[in-house]
Image 1 (cartoon, protein in one colour):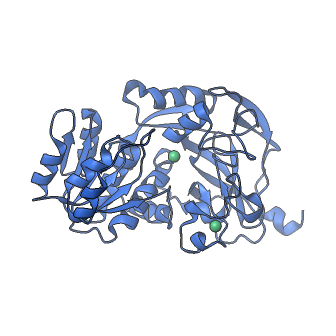
Image 2 (cartoon, helix red, strand yellow):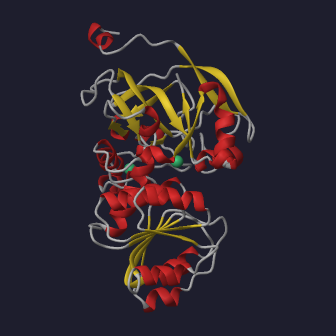
Image 3 (cartoon, helix red, strand yellow):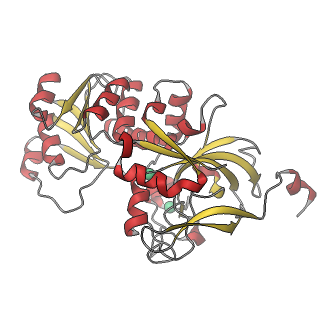
Length: 373
Ligand SMILES: [Zn+2]
Ligand SMILES: [Zn+2]
């Protein structure tokens, strides 16, 4: 190591605590070597990581994580992808960030050279490899194909980082990527959403952040639909103009009433089997649906209804087009209070408990955060 690279690093241990996935549902706390950042990468000391529904999927079923061409089990793989931390070491050539900078991360580092990456669609990188995760070409998705955030350190490409302001808590910063996903959904589907009506189906973390981001971007009527009153109440706190409990009210009729004949956009974050049909009926003609969630099984869709009414169907995957940077900016400006959806905090040693709280929604858990140091 030369003197100049030494000056760019802090004292970093050789090994770190990390959770790894053995058999399904079996997380184990172990020691791993602290990874080395390569060119255009940094080493992040992870300060906090939030549990996502997809982490639960990975821990129980494996997919959508694929590690070295197969299921992520018994491969010393560390899950976790919604983390933030502090930069402690810079790889070769990095001058975009400094040691000590606080950052939130995006999940996907695309290859940067394929058609989709060049369009800002790096979450749909074409060089994801035969088996998802072509590391030779630079593609990585931390917590999916490469080690993630249930550990004390992780390596991140600089393209996956967003600055965290000094007055934002670690817990709130873990929600930047969630808000970034909401931003990407609105960007792709609605563009200049100011003054237009948006229905958000499903008050999970992404749905709730979509309400907040839509309002921050100047949307007109924002209507949140769901089945749980406590979540809908949170939507009101985040700026929803109306909420509809679909178990008690006719959501399609209520939306058409609130929007004088139909909404401009529906952002579908519920994965409910009839969501696309309901969404189409909530829209005015020429309206647009964004699919940000999906049902577990194939579902029938009334395509003729979509065609007759010129309904556009969009989909998003993750947090493309630097949505996280714009979300981080809105949050830094305190345009909405993302902290409302953070409900529980656990220490590093209790990752399995944190996962259980998130999965079983114990004590009305929404976003469960683990503090790593
Ligand atoms: Zn996630
Ligand atoms: Zn690519």
